[in-house]
Length: 168
Image (cartoon, rainbow, N blue to C red; front, side, top):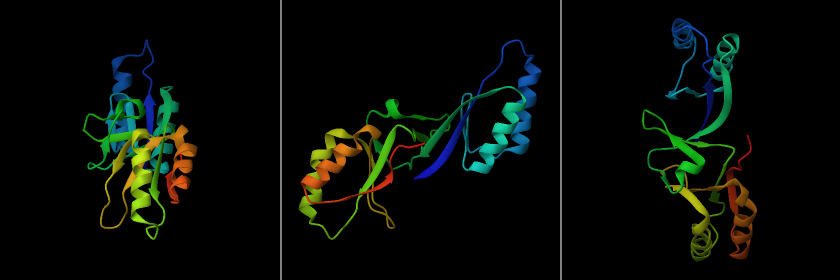
């Protein structure tokens, strides 16, 4: 899961269309934009975020800032529209301040206990990212449910490793 930054461009009324085109051109020349969704520019690191912010501030076009999590293509999701969006290029993002991600912490714990905890958690999950050759499966839930998830895990004698807790 990669952290990304979304910065919204606000187009001021009363400006000539050429002004907007100049700003877009300047962004293209100076910022490595990873993706875009309408007026939301998505960049992959803080350096690009700072460059984009400076250009938009100077043009008086800086809108909202959104910390994002870039989802792998194999992630499965439910209720996605509440916590994320799909860009024009078909990439999926989660609003980082709305979700939490975890894995089961200790594979030495009993498999049936992890399975039982996961069954109890399933009704609260927004989605999951399958295991890969270098990582265990990850689970996505609303950030307000981290205490509930911890309580369920404790009830079944398993522990959770938090990859992201929903803070900005």
